[in-house]
Amino acid sequence: MTPEHDDTGRSASRFGRPAAVVLVLLCGLTLLLGFINKDRCTGPAFDQWGRSQPDYDERNKEEVCYSDIQHLWIGRDIDRHVFPYVEGGINDKGILVGGSVEYPVLSGLLIWAGAIFAHNDAEYLLFSSLLLAPFGLLTGWLLGKLARWRALLWAIGPPLILYAFHNWDLPVALCSVAAVYVVHRWNRPLVERATVASVLLGLGFAFKVYPAAFVLPLMLFVATGGWRGQEMPAGKKVDIAGAVKVALASVVTVVLVNLPFAVAGYDGWMASFEFQQLRRVDITTNSIWYWGLRPFLGDDPMQDLVGVVSPIAILVSFAIAAGYGWLRFRREGTYPWIPVSGAMLCGFMLLHKVHSPQYTLWLVPFFVLIRVRLMWVFAYFVADLAMGIGIFRWFWAIEFGQPAGIYDSLSAQAVMVGVWGRAALLVALFVVFLKSRDVTDDDRADFTREGDHRPGAVPGLRLRSTGAV
Image (cartoon, rainbow, N blue to C red; front, side, top):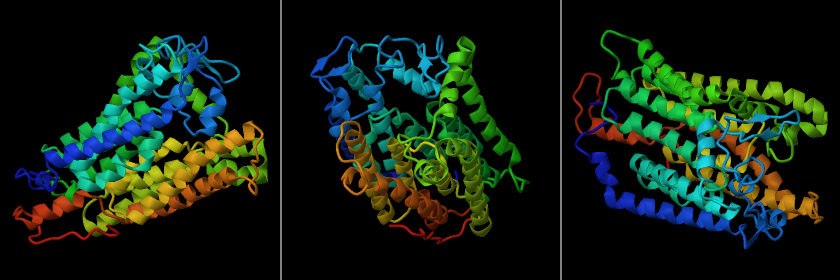
């Protein structure tokens, strides 16, 4: 048995089956509201390509019901039911053709699968939502098992309504949460648990890339023996072999998932990466780079600079987060891999050249898993609402001749609140996450407090949650 695991069921008893059922039902209701919100953009008529009519391009912005899922029914050969990547590629103008999409391969499979029985964009949105919903429900269930009622931040939070069916982000959120669940709830040796978690993070890479970053703090957690080093192999001070095994599990997973597509159609598979590399920083990317640098440098110099500075800055933020985690390990005896992972995600979202609104779904599980004060969560939700609603109303104003200046447009002001409010909060959360404890500390304290008599255990220990609600 490990410090994170108690086979008497004490932790489970505090969030038993009835509570989990209630949480999942609430999550299901929120997902339904999310679908209804996006479904407002569909129909009532359809043109020869299955595109909703009338006035789809105006309605999806003015009524704030736009979704990438519905929109990409046209333009990626999804409506033609072309299997992704195999015959695809990217042309000289940077346009994806022949079934290629701009997402990693597992997302591409979901994109294709949702269209199998669809004949128009409304049916595609419906079938894709049905395909994605179980990922959101399972994420809610796992978060409930890990954090009990704090999981309501996921289950009934505004981001799930706004973005659950905006893009294909629910599966990648599940991969991250499932990795945490396996490490802290599965009653197996640490390296075995962490190896399975690393496989899940590798699958997350094959959905939306970013979970692969969490492999580094997970390796450090394993290398230092888990909670207070109590799962360190006998006679070792550092478990290098265990950490390497964790890293290899993720790498092998990524290779095995991607290899069939790379072999079947290398150009089509590679096109998804080329598309992201070639993507310009523009008004649709919502990033600090566009709003912070373009007014001073102009467009082309800004593009060149961001292409170099952004990835370097992201890597530096990862190094800072991992390094601070090491300082905490030296001070507390446990490497805080969940808080470090949350901080790394903040760095990525802040410094990447694209900051799409739905990325908030990536962050919400960390609001649940890391014990930060709710004021941070609610502040981020407000800034996110300003962006998630304001950006589409602003696009509508620009495209259809409405007042769109910063002094005469509420939507333009909301976008500025969203861009800079989210940026400021991500900087703050980077620090707050690194200084906070995660929800699994409660179970470790309960375990020790109720009688762990192994060497190294501290009877009566009660861990205090820094900055907890």
